[in-house]
Length: 492
Image (cartoon, rainbow, N blue to C red):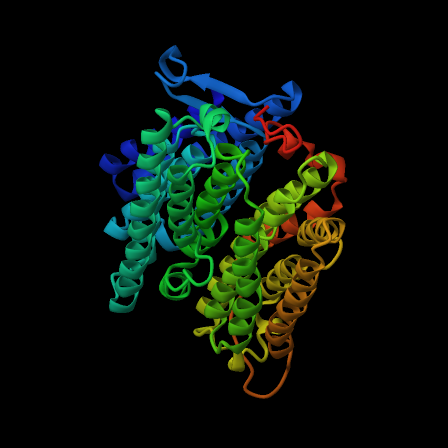
C-alpha cells in the first residue's frame, strides 16, 4: 500500500486544505510533511530489502483490466528527494505565505499551500503510475499545480509568464495524448510492463513515441522548447521556483525514461538517442552561455536550470549503446539518476538562497552585489556549495553523476559527450565565479542587508547535494532495482 499512500496523502491533504482557509492549510501541510517523508523512506527501505519493485493492483484487478502502481528503485529515490525538497520548501515558505495568529488570511497564501500539496501528489503519481493514461492525468495535475505558482502575485509580467508556461504545457499534453491513443489502438493496452512485451517497430509505434517524446520535451524545457522556463522563474516566489526547477521538470523526464527504456526496449533507438543527446549538449553550452550573460541573479539561476537539464539527456545514447553490457548500462543509468537527484537539491538550495538575497538586499542585480558576502554570508555559502555540485567539483553529488556519465561516454566510444560534460563544467564555473567574485568584493557603498534564519534551510539542501558525493557507489544500488535490463530486453 505504500505507493498508494504516497499519492493519497498529499492529494487528500489538498482537498482537505481548501475549506480550512490559509491558516489551516498551512498547518495541515506542515503536519503532512513528516508522514510523507516516512512513507518515502519506507518505500525506499522496502524496495531495497526486497530487491524488487513494490507493486499494488488497484481493486485487485491486474492489467490490462485494472491499473497497477509500481514503485521501483528510480521511483523510490525520486520520491525521497521530492519529500525532502517539499518539506524544506514548506518550512521556508512560512515567512512569505504563513498566517500569524490574529492576522487576516490571504487568498494567495491558501492557494500556495493547496497548490504545493497538489504538486506533491502529482509528482508522486508520476513516479508510481504504471499506465500511460494514468501518467497523463499525473502530468496534468503536475502542470496545473505548477502554473498558478508562477503568478501568485497577480502581476502583469508573472501572468504573461504563466500563460506562456500554460501554452507549452498544453502543447505537450496534446502531443503526449495523441501518442497514447496510437499505442492503445495498436496494442490494446497502456500498461508499461505489458507494452514492453508487445511493442514492435511499426509505423504506429514510431509515430506515437515521436509525438510523446516531443510533448514531454516541452514539459521538461529542453532546448529549444525551454522558452517558458526563464520567464516563469524570473517573477515567481523563491519557494515556487525551487519546486519548479527541482521537481516539476523531473516528472516529465522520468516519464520520458520509462517511455524509451520501458515501453519500447526492443526498438532501435541509437540514432534518435543521439538526437536527444545533441539537444541536451546544445542546452548545456547555450544555456550556460546565456546564464553567463545575465544581469539578474534569478535569471542566471533559471538559465542554469536550462543547462543542467541537458546533462540528463546524455544518458540516452549511453544506455542505447550498452546493449549486452549490463555494467556499462548500470553506470550510465546511475549517472543519469544521480544527476537528477543532485541537481534537485542543488537548484532548490540555489533558488531559495537567491530569493533571500534579493529580499535582503532589495535587488538581484549581479553588478551591485559587492559586499553581499559580508552582509549575507550563509546565502552566499549556499550559492557556492550548490554551484560546486552543478560544476561537478569533487566530492559533490554532481561530480559523481558527471563522472559516471563521462566514463560511460568514454567506454562507449562516444568521446564527444565527454567533451560536452567538461566544457559545460567550465562554463558553469564561470558564471558561479562571476557571482561569488562580485559578492565577495568589499568597497565603499557595498551591499547591505540582514541574514534571514531561513538561510539555514537552503544551506541544508546544498549540503545534501554535496554529501551525495561522499556515498560509496554501492549505495546507489537502489536505483538499479526494477530498471529495464538492457542485456535481456525485458522489465524485471
